Length: 327
Ligand SMILES: [Zn+2]
Image 1 (tube, rainbow, N blue to C red):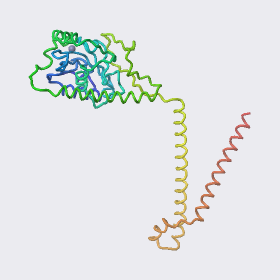
Image 2 (tube, rainbow, N blue to C red):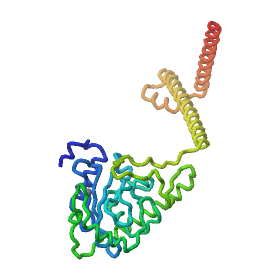
Image 3 (cartoon, rainbow, N blue to C red):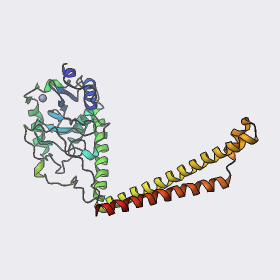
Image 4 (tube, rainbow, N blue to C red):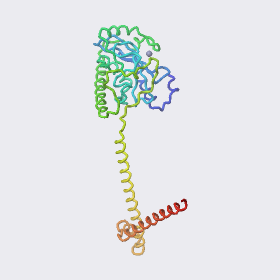
C-alpha cells in the first residue's frame, strides 16, 4: 500500500490508523472497514444487521471520517445504505460520533465505532440527530433491498462481510455492552453539562438543529469544537487572585531561603577564621556546620538591611533627580 509514502509516519493519528487498518484488514461475518486507497482519514465500512431484529439479513455500508487529532477527537459516522434507523448521508448521533466529542475516549477505536453502529441499530432513535423511527416492516423491506445496494467507490457491499457460518458470534453481545457503556458515558456528560448552564451541550434535544444538516458531498473532516465549559468572569478573577497569592508566597519563601543561606555562608566563613587560629584544620569542618554564633547572624542581617536601605534611597534619589531634570 502506498499510504506509507503519503503520510508523516510520526503523526500519532497516522500511526494509530495504520495499526487499526492492519488489525481490521480481514473481514468478519459482522463487520469490515478499511481506509480508502488514497485517504487514510476516510474509511468505508460494512456491517451486518444484528440477528433477531428487523435489520436481520441486511448489510449496511457507510463512511467513517477521522479528524486529524484522532484518537484524541472522535470520528464522524455517516450511513450510506438506506436502513430506516439512521439517516443516510448525514453525520449520525451515537455517543461515539463527532456529535458528542465530550463522551469520546481515546482508547475507543474504529472497531468500537463499528460495534456501536451494530449495537445502536435496534435501539429507539428517540429523535436523536440523524436517527429515524421507521416501522419494523419498513426496516425489513429496506434490509432486503440493502443486499442490492452498491457503493460508488466499493461496489457491491454484500461480499464485503464474510458469509454467516451459523456459529454463534460474540459480536452482538459485545455491541450491546458498548451501547450500555456509551449510554452511561453520555448520561454522565449530560449530568456534568447541566451543572454549567453556559455550555450549550444539547444532548437531550429531540429536535434536529439546522446547522447539523450535512450535504452528501461535504467532506467535513473538522470535528465540532469540544464543548468545554467556559469559565465565568468571577471564576477567572478568583483564579487570578489565587495565582497572585501563590506567587507572593513563593517569593517570600525564596527570600527567606536566600537570607538563611547568606547567613550560614557568612557564619561559616567567620567560623573558619576563628578555627584556623584555634584548632587543627581537620576538626574545623565539623565545627563550621554546627556552630553559628547568633551575634554574627544578627550583625549580618543588620548589614543586609543597611545595604537594602542604601539601595532603596539611592533608587529614590535617582528617580527624584530624573524627575527634576525632565520637568
Ligand atoms: Zn464504499
